[in-house]
Length: 240
Image 1 (cartoon, rainbow, N blue to C red):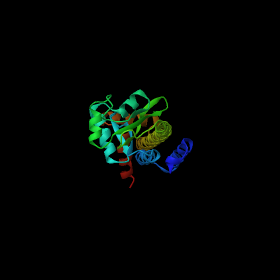
Image 2 (image 1 turned 180 degrees about the horizontal axis):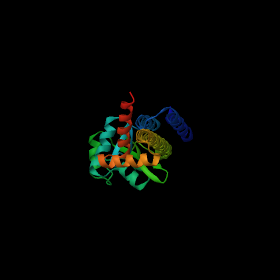
Image 3 (image 1 turned 90 degrees about the vertical axis):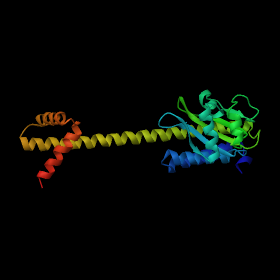
Image 4 (image 1 turned 90 degrees about the horizontal axis):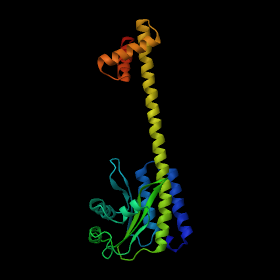
């Protein structure tokens, strides 16, 4: 059982699992789903875990959760604008709630969480380089479910999760740049084909062909690549 291991060994189990993710997972969504499963298993009192990040529109959202009730408990935080996960995120510090009904820091969220069956919470910031990308959190159904040892473990776990998210973002950025570069190469090839067709048809230089292509783009109110594609297509049809 993970709960019976020393803290260093618990972290080793988590790191080993994260290393496997880095090698085998290709999408951030599937990776995060495995992350929250690992978090829920690593802390004995946990009744569910989740990861909060910003979505594509800049809204805070639960990117992955081990249980639907985790999403619902998180959603109450986003809707009310208060709660331990948001506090950990903004303060870049671990936030522990021993009893949501006794804790007065978030008077609206506490009763809402209790109504969903969650009585304790533990959240740690998900630090990525010099920024905070979100938070990792676990909930418990009984008050006082988390200890200082759990705080330390979740902090270490969130640190590893932060590295993972940073690596995934770097991978996504590299893939996006690669796709953009491929697009540039494709556009260049289309323009070169169009210039070649104009040079052959009009018996003009490469520079003059490019100027003609720019003129066609302006007259047709198209971008240069679209105008070049039309010229290349007409040339291909004429050569058949």
